[in-house]
Amino acid sequence: MKKHPLYATLAGFSMIAVGLCLCRYAYTPLIPSLIDEHWVTKAGAGYLGGFNCLGYLIGCLGALFLPAYLSVRLLLRLSLVIAVGGLVMCAWDLGFVWLALGRAATGLGGASLVVHTPSVALPHVPENWKKVASGVVFTGAGGSIMLVSLLVPFFLSHSVMWGWLFEAALALVAAVIAWPLASTAATQPNHNRTRPDPLPRGVAGSLFLLGAAYFLAAIGITPHTLFLTDYLHRDLGVTAAQSSMLFSLIGVGSLLGALTSGVIARTLGTPLSLLANYLLGAVAVALVLLTRSMTVVSVSAFIIGFFLLCCVALSSVRTGEIGGSGRHPHYWGILTLGFGVGLATGSYGLSGLLSLGMDYYTTFVVAQGVLIVALLLAGWLFLRRHQTAGS
Image 1 (tube, rainbow, N blue to C red):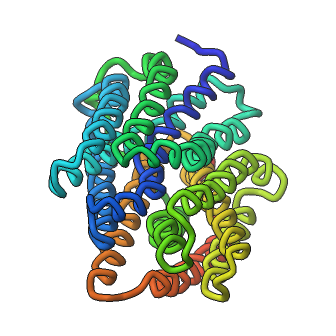
Image 2 (cartoon, one colour):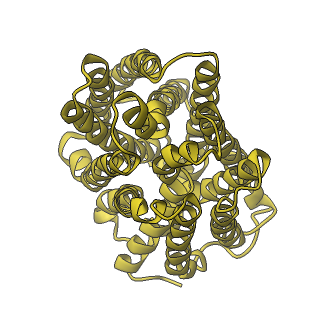
């Protein structure tokens, strides 16, 4: 069942493209048109993002516990089908509840792909290339964000429905590419699946710090990844098509962040790379607060994209370094769940504040405070960098 390393990396790329971009972030370029065409209100668009995160949370729990009852192969295949189906559902405006179910379905489908892709794809890659391959796999999100942001305005010029169907078609293509890799996953449920042995207190503390910073990162990126296009459209006066194209800079940053994360980790070490990356995230939000200049906001979008996918890839690698490679699927699943909780907290919390009259600018103020706390936790984690369980 061994696959060629290049194919495994491509298939992993495709799974992450579906799980992280098409199931989640590809929604953001659609928001200005959804509001303009009266599918949803401004707060309603945020709440749809929250339902997506709710589905993602349920999917993360399933990814953690269902392998005791279902094979990982079946779980991945179901996830790909649900992801595509959820996107197709959203192409018809049958009311807010229908759209909420569609967004929840895409979140549900995407979660297992994010949790299980590293452990399914990377065993096919030689050990000395795993860090680099991990980065390439996570470029699936950045590459697809960039592609969607640049091309979806053409489809949106016809209608929002065509924008959704375009994204569903991309997800279907990615699912076809990834399907054979899913066939290499475990074919039987692991009925004897047990929790890993308890970690030493110091090591468990380091994993907690890593997870807490990762949770806060999910909240901190919410204004950029959920509200940026409509902020550009309504507050800074650019067209919906231009805001979508500017959102592509998040994709470019994500692509480079994921692609270079392995090289950076090999050069600087994962602990220092993570600390520097959290500093970049805080700087990215500060730029939006300091000016309304489109050039500076564009730079901010690029940096937050770099921060996002570099953070995902580096956190995945660091989880294995701290807890041990054998415990990686378990603890990475928990961190992914925490990230999902952070996304839901940011989406529902900030959308609720918007419905009470808060403006988009204030959401970036909230994100700034959250990311400063995350940076402090990353600094503390760096000081504890020798607290690891090994492999």
